[in-house]
Length: 349
Image (cartoon, rainbow, N blue to C red; front, side, top):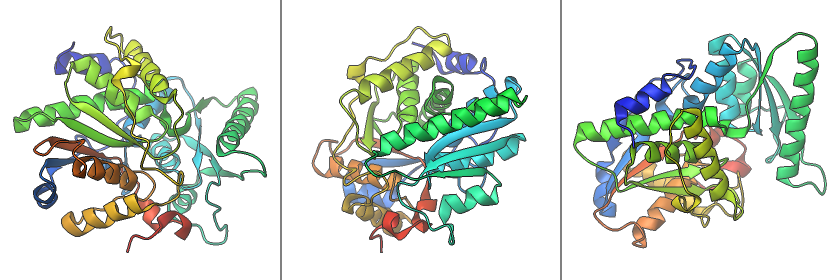
């Protein structure tokens, strides 16, 4: 178990580019806390920068692009869906670092090329090289994602052969280097809680690729905190998801030179709130978006933070999170999805 200062010293050994505005705010949701019977705090990574549309990926990109710059790379490849927050934030961060972004985006929700919206519009404004990868007949979303990754690697190999150094970032920045950003995030949160003289019982967040979850779990193990992490899945997860997230957390701890470890049993993902699928809205998420907007004036998104917040609300209302608990919800950003295709936005008004 490390102190906050010791954890900071481990993180300082990694290359890092300063991209976000940290620490992001942590504040109590006064009206909603009164309605729900818990002390509910919001960790505002939606306000992290590098531009107006920040989010949780910026923390990962500080370390990923720090590594890319340290290795002398000039072109960065990454992957996601057409409205990927991660892809857009990667493009913005690359421009901040003087790097060229290349995006391979799977069309889970088919975009209209004549009317670019939301993150896909921002990708083009940022001047990213964008490749749209349609899902073929008989192909699953996961298979299309694998094909997109192969296409990116093939292009990068060609550029490397011609003398351009390339850097590959997996979907969601889910790698040990990327997850180090959320070890730093956990340390930041604990400093803020200490300054308030309180301790969180539960920390809830939306989980997709698992990179954020792995970093948070690694940070908790590093500091020996008792806070329960409640990850809410926003897409289907197989039985091995927790084990892979724990392995990524342990790879991140090993990267930092720490001996602490995360066991797969330490992580339990709530899988009951994402249906009918990724980037497909549901009532739980839509209700959560309206509730937070109409009680606190804060916006969530239908893909990630809305479903995660909705899952947390249900856990509070059913007593799975007991009354009187102190709960932190990590707002991972993504409200640009409210301006995406209608099939993604859903019934939020």
